[in-house]
Image 1 (cartoon, rainbow, N blue to C red):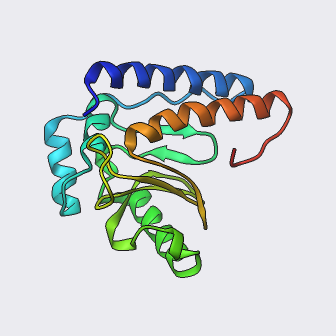
Image 2 (image 1 turned 60 degrees about the horizontal axis):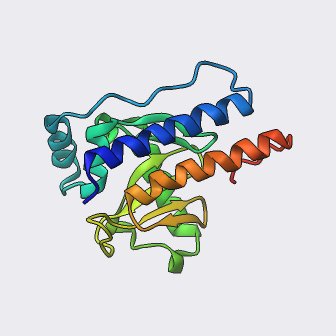
Amino acid sequence: MIDRKRWGITIGQMLEARIAAGQAATYPRPMPAPGSHASDEAITAAQDRLGFALDAQHAALLREIDGWPELLFGVGDLLPTADLGQGPRWKAANELLDIMYQDGPTDQFPPREEVYPLHAGDLDVIVIWRTGPLTDDGHPVYWLAGDVVDQWPNVFGYCLGTIALNQVLINAAKRGETNRHP
């Protein structure tokens, strides 16, 4: 399992990369900050709404930051505990997933009934395959946008990926490009 110190360092790097991406792209409003620590009660309430335990790394991340609006430009929000299993963002993410699974190349996707949204946007959903193979006590994470855009071995890998993806966005902004997906 990833210890709290390593989570803290990684979240600090995520914040630095996100701030740099916002500056490079001349972000038009104040940069959204990550949410405060989720309590054990908030995590338990989310699990009760979902009807299953959260991925261990996902729960560990939520204990450090309870969601993060606009973590990646144009790709939506890391969902906080209050949105897991309820609310408009949860509903929209699941409706989008249903459409992707009806229309997309589902042979590349994990089984629909075995995923839940971690990160939700208007055209993208990043999901955790909650029954997939474990790596460091975490399950695989997939970025879906009609196809598999990217995937990571677990939530910690996703966090490291956001650092790299923000760097790609910084480089694109410096070149004057505005691609939605890195």
